[in-house]
Length: 173
Image (cartoon, rainbow, N blue to C red; front, side):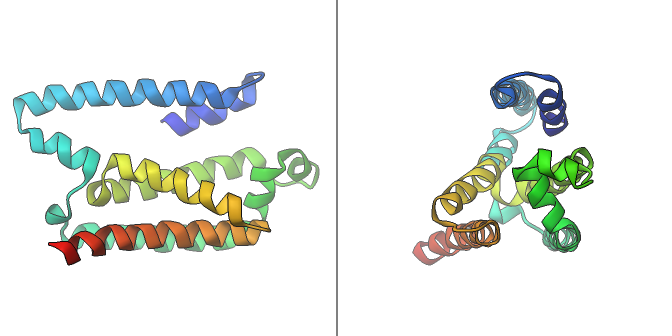
């Protein structure tokens, strides 16, 4: 898994582990795209299109149920580890001094992000999942005055963007 490799690279490399993570992500995306193209040549190009862009038309009740369960599981887990995870994410040295299991929390966070990503890919597509993981957090970081407001603004921006992305095309159709 890409995220596990990034955690490992951050723990063993010197400067710029984030650069290594982005290189790794690009390689994984390129290899995955190539595999999808080979499969699409044998099957239908719609498979590739649905993977990258999602398809509201191919959503079943089971997909929404899976997304709901993953959401509730993630919220329950975050509620339990929120303060320690925030400290470990933004000040790992202080967290270690205070006895917070930083590496373990990194892996828990990676598992949660992976679950949400896998649950959402069929609905909104791989490209938009990546965008929804980065852009709302970047926008919230510019506006937030505290860690708590940063977290909740990120959730608000991502939720609003998702709802608007569904509602606007439906209204214009």
